[in-house]
Length: 127
Image (cartoon, rainbow, N blue to C red):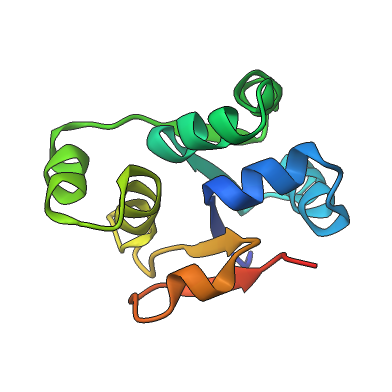
């Protein structure tokens, strides 16, 4: 049986990836080389990451192992109800269980403190 791992990058993890974070580089490599490893970038978090570090969106969009997740209507409604801001709200929504991800996904973040009190599993990739 193949282990399945779903990881959603928040905006801080995306910026860290662009700055050469070793753990994120390994995750990208594993998602490319290993079956059952999946990386996701919510569109709202991608926009925020690109604002923080211009060029991040193009860099991440070029990675074949990274799936960009659109802001569809259910996600937009969840984001609209969340006062935390678009990036964290979309990332949190994407991390919830779905038919494709029955156990949900872990959120890779370089700012774990921002996720306190949220019902998501965190993968701290910060320094």
